[in-house]
Image (cartoon, rainbow, N blue to C red):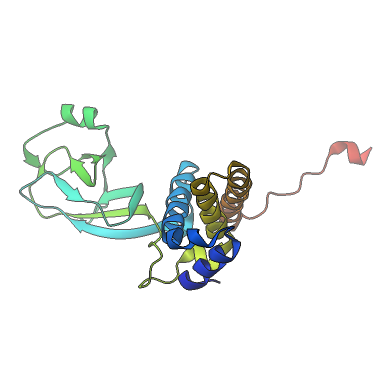
Length: 207
């Protein structure tokens, strides 16, 4: 495990020039953002999953998404029956519109969940979603990545530093290592969900 402070120290130790040290926070921010976008491109990981409840307003057809939201896993209206809501694109949602009632369809528009109508009651909406890890800072000195994949943040930060410094060869090296670490995180997550694939014995081996 590393901390925000020790990560910055490690990045500084690897940097070829001392004058880049003032930009270390920017390099870490870039590495975190790139990790989030790339891991979401391959389906996210369980460590990013969270569940929360939101309360409908009876005056508007939207609910604000939780802070850090990057992708939806599941949603239902908790009316005692866990009524499923059907996803529509924003364009499809327009054709399902009504004035007020119990929402049946939804879309994600900007930073909100939008329904096909204004709810006629303050329904509870339960969602399971992917949330970005809280960014590292002086007030948040560790997160899942510093505990479980510290090399990833170092590599991603050094890629950003190399790009900033115009060192294409170093940037390519760190980019490759950074992507490899992301792939390993995803593979480990898949293994933890399903376990190793069963061994397949070739019939040829019996001959």
